[in-house]
Length: 474
Image (tube, rainbow, N blue to C red; front, side, top):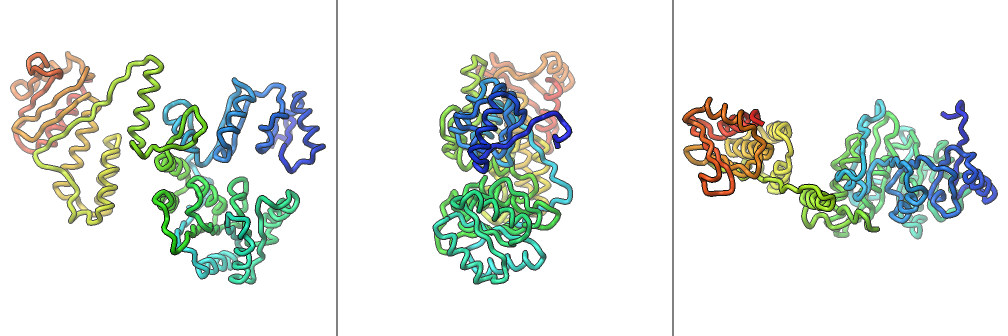
């Protein structure tokens, strides 16, 4: 791509001979090389740059903290662009806090299809069927077995199950020359099944490879599983990923969560969602230390992020305002009846999702999903959705409490509600006799109150109308 530009482009890795590396290092130090593309070899101490201006890090999750610290030392003021399909928890967390800028590419390549993902127990019959199905349509297969000491045993199994397969074995303990030859043979279609370790995790683009079988998927991380699955489905054909786990062994809760996430998030461009789930499962780690994950589940991701954000503001000397979490009381309780959503686990997940909705349009989308999955919601569920709607609206007005259980609708404001006094006065005149504003010196409390006496009917709907009118007073 840069052939017609006056730029010198070189590559540096362990595949270069010592003599070639020496020449490239000398040219880098002199500044005669404009762009150098390399592996971790670029981070070694004998690599010196004359005037480094931009550092692009691809597949960031493959680098540890020590490697990243070395990147910082290359030049203190260097611009850094990090590329990854699945940011590690700490990096994603830093972007969420505003420490790093982030942008996402969500548009997939044309004609790209999602990958059909199956989690199953280790089954030779399933392996045979998956490989034969791919070979019958002229494709290629990755079989990931991440233990070098038993990889030959896995090779014998595959040869016995599918004797017609042209099998090649690749792992990191092979010599550079042999490993490169095997990879080139697979890329050129000379072999159609590649049994390998996780060395294929990144950097491979084989359009004909559209099935991947991952043995002991429970032992791999979420980002690893996502990256490995991304080795297939890189063309217009439907791809398949089989995540195999031991049939009789009991999986840990963390492993179950990882497999559930990777099985559910199969849509194109799901890497950011996978990373967010990884952050929730593993934790964010230390922002300035060496740990890249932590115990975020102990307090929950939302609370943890709020705690970090308020601490950062405190250290900067900025004012920290405690978020108001409104209390909502309606005439009757809102909930998801057991007759409406029978599965208790699904009900719990729905409650959890509903409580985390940030905006009114999300409540509308949530209600549409309920209708689609379970049918028209009963009155109790409608009250639940109304309460969540009121809570979201109340937050914008610094409202601490809405009590619509009595004859009148009572609203208790928090500190410094964002209301223009002249607009509130106009609203009071318009609703003379029905709406009263009670200052805190009259209620003998720390907060102002407002009381609305409507004409009967649905109190929840009346409270929503009143909040809408108050929002217009901001």
